[in-house]
Image (cartoon, rainbow, N blue to C red; front, side):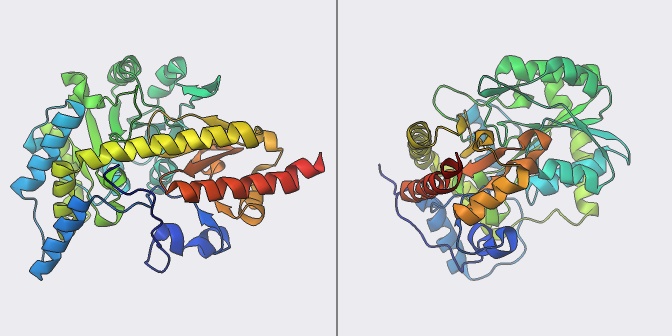
Length: 394
């Protein structure tokens, strides 16, 4: 490989949420963090160089969206996903979750229903409830080790909703939705006048054999009644640089979104983020290709380890994202007991499945975007704890 994904980079005492909040989040500092969705890899060299050059300028005043900003987004969407978007469709966001907050405020009223598909990224529910909207759930169906959409239930639930948060690819279960599935979602939402908000932040992280399809690219009708939330943050490990954006083809919807952003004083952008994103989108493709190959190797290592040494677990194989949803129910722990076991016996910090909804009880989300040596260390710690605690009681 031309790029190094094996080196372990110390992130402690760098203000990294993933590593420096373990005591507050899990009650212990001596756990291996494999939870929050950022990577333990350095960002691409082209990004590092762009940031160095911008830092050397020495003046870091208020930033605006340059031609380079817009062209990098349009070029990436066209070249990577085959989606031709226009400059006027792009609106900035400090992050995808802040964008969802603006959307809830701009397009719904108190008591309106917002539809989600649990087990799903837990800030979805938090944002909806924070603004006194009603959470409408269309739970995914777990069948034969994979997740599917219950379309009959979606048809009924859509009648109660004004907006749908579509996680595509899905976090945490890793589904990359097929074209026929996306079309059925879109048709149902059109029938019931539900605006689709597609969180496509993991769009670039798809494994061979699968293809991410931007929801809004499928038809003019879908584009006109949807908002796409995107960012290079997961792709290139830029989460701290506030590089998210929205793509809103409908001019009236875009104006309403930007009006709410101005009202909330959330229209500014990060001076370093602009340059990091442009460099990543312009030059980062080869790095991303190697990253996906490395992640695929990590996933293969995880699956083989579990099959050979942890048969009590079932890996829900992701089609996309670097997050792996693991069924731990055969370990025999109750909800809180499983959390305590992983932290205090295995020394591991995963994202607890129940955070993603009741459907996630007994599951854990594992972030495999780390050097393979750390993944191996974590899995060995888990194996030793299972051997010591679970198998010893049988």
